[in-house]
Length: 174
Image (cartoon, rainbow, N blue to C red; front, side):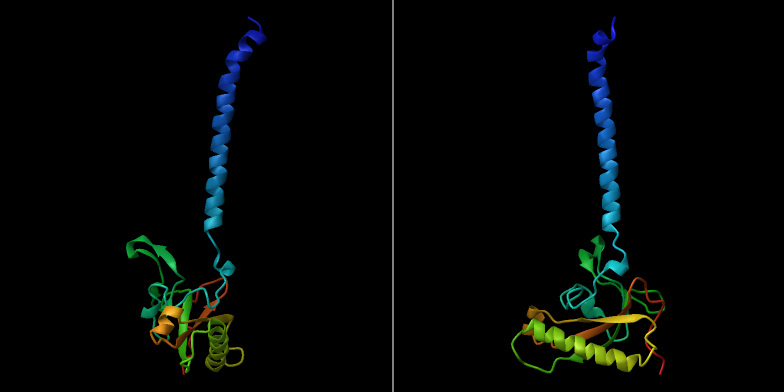
């Protein structure tokens, strides 16, 4: 028996091993890519007026001064929701107040966003004057076109720490 005689018999087995090895390698790469791609560090999250809206489930349960986590998929809750977190624990965000858009104008998302950023900035500076903000940033949570039509004119102002969780309530003790 020569190598030429055995080569055709080995070729399919070798090809199957290579295919199995390649498939396993491909599955591993896809799994690692999925794991790496699905774990978004909090520093990569853009928290702006679109991050959470009045229609994000759970956000309407948050009151001024309360802490909550970023929206997350909770199958037991039926999907993506905002979860209240006692401020004594660590949390992603803390509501530091509400501002009322005192207008009855038609829905104008650009004007509302400009108002919300300006008003939340003013409230932020009053809440944490000078350098007392300790690395905090803020973003507004706006009414949506649907909640606006229902008369919602309140904007929630939210503080957070880019790249990390809040270690407790960040509101100053007056």
